[in-house]
Image (cartoon, rainbow over all chains, first blue to last red; front, side, top):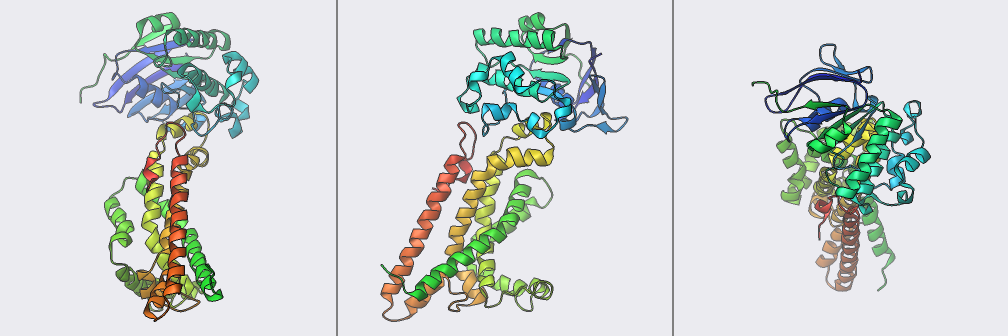
Amino acid sequence: MSFEISVTLPRGAGIRVDFAAPAGLTALFGPSGAGKTSLLDAVAGLLRPREGRIVAGGEVLFDSAAGIDLPPERRACGYVFQDNRLFPHRRVRDNLLYGPGLGATARRWMTLDEAVAFLGIGHLLGRMPATLSGGEAQRVAIGRALLSGPKFLLMDEPLSSLDAPRREEIMGVIERIRDELRLPILYVSHDRAEVERLAGRIVAMGQERLAP
Amino acid sequence: MTLSPEEWGIVALSLKVSLVAILAALPIAFALAWVLARRRFPGKILLDALVHLPLVVPPVVTGWLLLIVFGTNGVVGRWLAETLGLTFMFRWTGAALAAAVMALPLMVRAMRLSLEAVDRRLEGAARTLGAGPWRTFATITLPLALPGVLAGMVLGFARSVGEFGATITFVSNIPGETRTLPLAIYSALQMPGAEAEVTRLALISVALSIVALVASEALARRSGYGRMGGQGAHVL
């Protein structure tokens, strides 16, 4: 199993999420407010669940019963945010090299040249993030996540801010990450067509809620 | 316009006092700005008010409080004299202390606003890429807040150069030791026939202030990066 997740998220009365997912791309599908982004934040270590257990890529990232709560920098997750969150004061090259620059060479499995070729972003390396189009910024954000040497990817509606041709292009990139790089991916979306095309497994969120 | 050696000495003393004041206040101002921008704790409003106090209390009262706390018989003053050999009474160090206290609210304010303008989600992104909390601070938070920090220092410097009331109350008006630009202007105004000196020193004060304000504004504008905040550091 790539992901074994059983947590109560600290949103409102508490949102209960419970699933296990095999390798490949697992889509978290549901209406906004269902806690999809909160769940990704919890897996990344940016949000602490009320209680529960998160296992990803065979490693226990969080276990309230055992007192385990790895800090985000030790979870080796590549997080592609909905709003890309590129560092505005660093050029594209320095955004891409942010993870490798930290010296975490042991967990890296892709070089800058490979990532640049994989994503077709060679012509963007000298640009500042504010000058990139939505599709360009999202490709750089994916590259930055891959170059940090992740054991799995978290993707939060990576297509939502893009127009139709760009969506098609980024969807192709995601399929290649899934099939060629064979990275487990947790993928959040509220678009049924997108989810049905990409996902090997679909987890519906927004039904189960705890009473207060 | 030419200055006499004595007037150059006044300018040099003012710059020395202000520079030392700002450098000494910098770590304290940044720590206060950080706590006020990022932490929640009981009594935060009280700390906020205390930091801003020198801005609203009559400077002569601030000077009097400094006398009580940092004077020869003051609690902190005696301790500093005994442990570090650092004394403030009737010395330029006291002028620097008064200037630092008066500049602190402006410095904290600019730094706090720039820290609050830093998008914390970028810090989260840095953490997921493998950066620990300190690394994240050094590579993301500080660079993004830096223009505001520098603007706060420039503003504090300008405020220090203009400091009068707390200084004259705390360390008196001693030529060559505590007589900074505003105190020298005040002294010259008391003397008949010193209008030319008053004019010269006043022009220098105005010029220093304008340079500082323009520099601080330029720094605040630089914090744009196309889409980020930073507007909080503007004074003009």
